[in-house]
Image 1 (tube, helix red, strand yellow):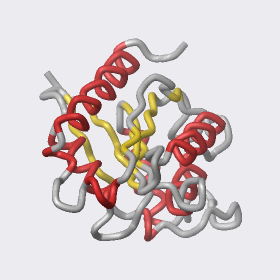
Image 2 (cartoon, rainbow, N blue to C red):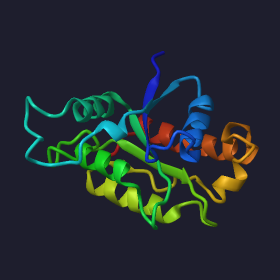
Image 3 (cartoon, rainbow, N blue to C red):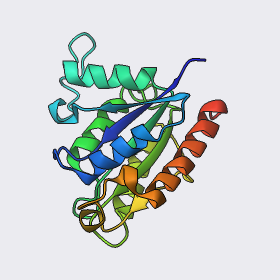
Image 4 (cartoon, rainbow, N blue to C red):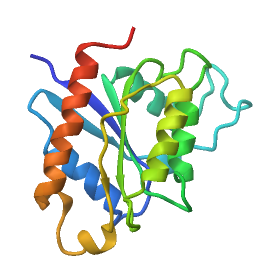
Length: 187
C-alpha cells in the first residue's frame, strides 16, 4: 500500500519555532499510511510577483513548492500568529500555490490548518486567515480539522509537543479529517 503524502508548510522561519516543533510532532504521530513531508524552504521563495511567474522561468524555490504540493494528497498549514494574522512566508506560499488562477497546486487539495501561539487562543485568528486564503486559492479547506495550542512559549518551554498527550490526541483528530477528505475528494 502506498503512503498518502501530506505536504506541511510551517509559517515560522525561526529555528526554535514552537510551530516547527508542532509540525515535527505531527510528523512523528502520522498514521503508518501517511508520509508527512515538512517543506523547509519557505524563506527562500521570493515574494509573489506576476512578472517573475512566467512559464519556464519560475524561481526554483517556488517551482519546487508547486511540484511538492501537486504531488501531495493533502496540505497541512502550521501557522503562528503575527499581529493577529498569518506570517508573510506562509501567505507568500499560498499566493504561489494559487497560480495559475483556477488551476493552482492547491485547487481541490484537502487542506487543514493548525498552529500554536503565545496568546490565550493559540493563534485562531491566524488559522482563520490561513483557511480563508487557502480557500480563495482553491483548496478544499477542512473546517473541522482544527488544532490551536495556546501559551506555546510556556507550554513547550520544557515539553516538546510530541510528548504532550493532549496535543498528540488532537493530532489524531486532524489526521482523521485529512484521511476522510483524501478518501472522498471534493466534487
